Length: 276
Length: 316
Image (cartoon, rainbow over all chains, first blue to last red; front, side):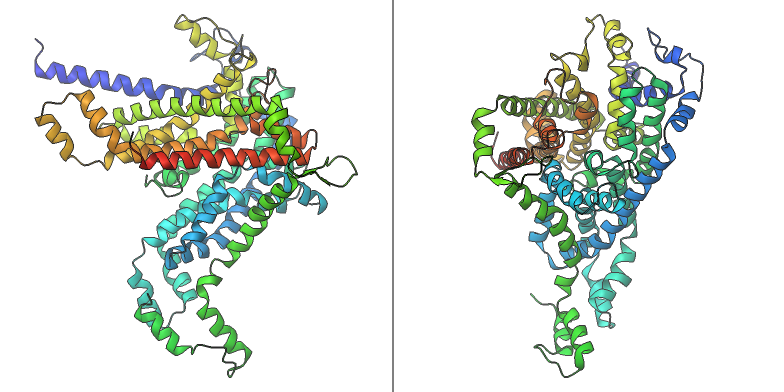
């Protein structure tokens, strides 16, 4: 018969072992991505794989920049994601305020439908439209289309933030002579600043990650990072260093941004249905 | 119901098209009275332009025969495209089956694993915050980059996955390089990415459960399994259905990882509707036919959502 203390200790060991085992796959994929990007070719394609002991090189990273206009692609991704986020905010904030303020359920539902419609069903009309307007391979086309992922996120998450503002504040502002616009801009928006940051980052990440729209509508001048990396696959079949380096470099900004707003991620992904 | 503040508003700005103050005043009155329509107006315009218009256009295009690569104009052919996908196109039916199967496999694995993980993590322990943080990363990481890493890990001779498989004594697999296993290998990537979502949603649901049923169950001598099956699961069901709903909608639409890793191959073994439709539209420029598939895919996603929303209300 083991005494109670040993039993508790054993239970603790078993529990933490389970936690580590469960979390191992998550960590391993990222670990593998980063280590592959730092391995020289010999280590990267060694079999059995070298898990911990390998020589470190930055050749993969240098190769990415030497063989591709990677800075241009990064710039493109930045422009499109920032443009999309800014536009989504300008258009989405008043809309979210209005839905929260005047309980415009129908409008909210219509925007939710946009989340359900498969992205690819927008793509055919956009392609035809932008081709006719000669706007394929322009930032404008990419920014507009990325709004399809950015705008619904901004609106739905911000509704929750605006609803949390006590209505007395708006009433007080209006008694003091504020118009609806003043109440929105001077009272409501400053109060939801943390929400604006969180949704802005969410919208930025979704645009940054977008593959489907950009693969058709981006051309040589506006190619974004996911497309650039996809194009690297074919030519560098077994040259894993640069591939892993590129993957690491795309993922890094997303990871940093995600860490900043981690409390809001689940709320964002479930459109406010679940408070993280 | 108008609140007192709105009433003072109305008194200040007399109702009716009163033009006495000139156009400037009239505009200012108009904007005050119609604030509730003006606030969402820009969003409304954007949604009309980039969402409603394309959806209607796709619906209209699905009734036409048109190759965007040729110089001919679209020809109206009624529901012939739909007849073709429903009865005469084995490739679409194959893709339809694969799409559903991919979703069922991925989402049920995610639900089982996610719920299990949530039950494991549903207590105070050192490192809980770290676990939460790590869980969020796979969902947010760029899918293209993740797909790329899995391409390297799945390599049949040099990949680390086969090494890990051999460590536990299983036969080597061909992962995405064989038509027998490609769909499952892709589903595994989806499971890796999205199990944390179900876990985090379940965790939020578990935290909100009442304590009393468990206390009385313990007094009645219920086992841990009985507690789970008879209390936790039924109480958690609405939360789980929401989680499954979100996952099912997105799994049916999975595009990035499949396109990057297999492009539907080998031998069409991972060609879901999304991939088939993409190729019809942008490799063959068969816009009319591809549009009808887009409508069909939308119907499938909507159907799945409605079924799941109904399940939320009905008993087990």
